[in-house]
Image 1 (tube, one colour):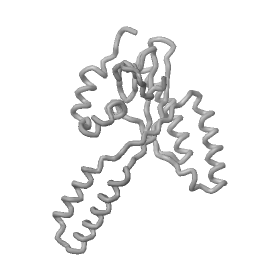
Image 2 (cartoon, rainbow, N blue to C red):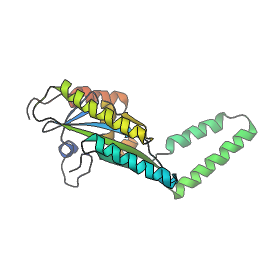
Image 3 (tube, rainbow, N blue to C red):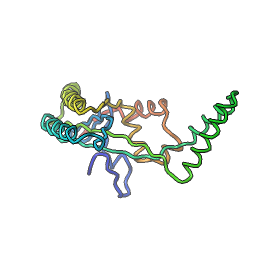
Image 4 (cartoon, one colour):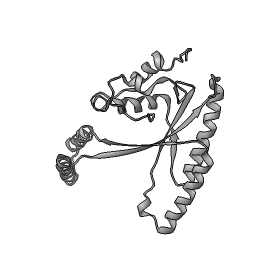
Amino acid sequence: MSLLQKSTSKVSARQQIDIRGVKDGILMLSANRYRSVLQVSSVNFELKSEDEQDALIETYESFLNSVGCPLQILVRTREIDMDKYLGELDEQLTGETEAVYKMQLKNYDEFIRSLITTNKILTRHFYVIVPYTAQSKTDFGIVKEQLGSTVDIVMKGLSRLGIQSRELSSLEILDLFYSFYSPEQAKIQPLTEQALQLVHTSYIQKEQVDD
């Protein structure tokens, strides 16, 4: 099963994803498997000229050959909760004193409300998951060094494609899994930094000594 592929079987999320822990931005799985998760920007391939497209394809091919390990590409499309944004618009409208600006804000507010009654406002996020598997139980410092080297190669290769990337922190990785496996709950009750830190320190970060 793919690392972030949702299963239909009735088992817990932790059983599905088989997480041992998250430490220093590295996801630890069973069988000495480790993952780093990069959030990346996108490139609008269709808007490029034919020559630019050919150059991108050639650069992408060179990039894949330089990595030397399989990569997982994850594209997440989620509906944006507009309630907070509309609330902020209401506050601006209430506090605005200039008649012209007040009218512009009112018209914009009405436009947004009419738009979301017939359309879902979606956002897309892109991730690249970088793997590392140790042959046997290995010191975490070595794992971090080896995986970090591969991550560096991947980030430089993405940069040559015009794609910006950044490595997710431990808490951001936990939040990614939370929103993936409990999307409705995540919209109603998003995890705060304090809640994520509590999960992180209570049991997720603890390494299991048994395989």
